[in-house]
Image (cartoon, rainbow, N blue to C red; front, side, top):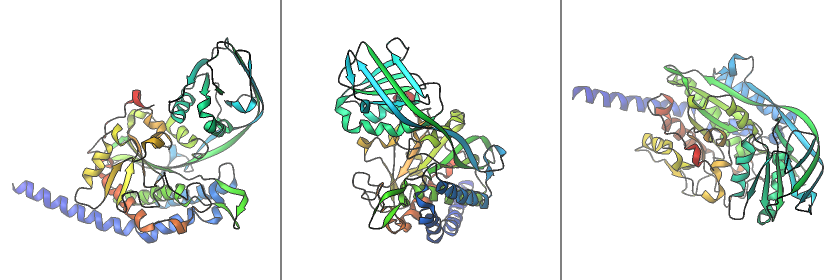
Amino acid sequence: MRLIASTLVFLSFSACLSAQNIDKIINETSVEQTERTLSSDDMRGRAVFTPDIERAADYIESRFKAAGLKTWNGSDSYRQPFTMVQATPVSAAGILDGEAVPAAHVIAMSSATELSIDENSGYEKVWIKAGHNFATEVMHYIHEKKNYLVLVDTSYAANFSRLSRFGRQQFKSPTNVICVLSSVNPTHYSIKVQQEIKESALANVVGILPGKKKKNEIVIFSGHYDHLGVTKQPIKGDSIYNGANDDASGTTAVIELADYFSKQKNNGRTLVFAAFTAEEVGEYGSQYFSSQFDPERVKAMFNIEMIGSESKWGGNSAFITGFERSDMGKILQRNLEGSKFTFYPDPYPEQQLFYRSDNASLARQGVPAHTISTTQIDKDKYYHQLTDELSTIDIPNMVRIIKAIALSSATIVDGTDTPSRVDKNQIR
């Protein structure tokens, strides 16, 4: 009994110290300063393939260095570089069972300058019929790394053109995915595509905090730092998509958490802090990042996206995408028992948010990788608008969320808890 009592006193004392420490590290002054810098006009919207995103990367690197994080793979930089292919369509034509297909109904995800295929080319033909989840199905085939002809039912005509963003930027790959808007599943077909190809360099920003006891086990905290850049059509004199909520808020959380955990000096597992690029053009930064890990070593991923406003439940709350796919949410909530904060399941399942953010690549490999968010996506009037600025951000609520993530993740960070894996067979 004395041992139990002593243990409880020790745990209570440790929790009190942790609460005191966290208030000194994660507070409104620090969070606002970080958020203000990332979403400032000086960053000019942090668009990929521009000098502006390089300024943002420089700033994130400086914060990781100040926190004492190790660089990625022992390099001389926190940048994790990779190469993207930018494809500009030149022409497209198709014939399905003798019927011509308009050029606008053909979109290629390919790094080839020319493609010419028919039913004898060895492409696997699939058809996304009416009633399927269009975005989820397409993303599945894009990630399969096989040659596909993806026939998309004409009921998705209004959304079909959105696939072009995946065609404009992609990894250099020997495999190709060609999507065709069609009302039939043809027996015979021929499709030709021509495009101009340009290779460009991008980089995630990644910092490492080695584990004290379980160095080979990894916990990831991430957010994306790219946004939409500058528009050529200003509204009321404003042309900069500042992306304060999307996703300077998530990147701010990653920086604050890196600072917090580096000062705690008690992480049993190795912590990886990642700011992803190219989320807005197809989640390519997180795809590349995920390919660098043995997924069995990654025990959890906390992806943080758009936490700059209150959730539908008000303050002291956030939701977790894919809550039902692992028990990570239950672990986090248990660690917050007695607090005012609550993590809820995703209230917007129809939006398929679990597949639409940077957690998806590792989740597809079975990692308990989830996105934490508060945005009311069904009525967020600032999403992808010029008005997504610092003035719209609820800094005090952001602070509460970041603290909640820090405290609720403690047993996963120290290696005491290990969330259950995501079922890879149910990822679509």
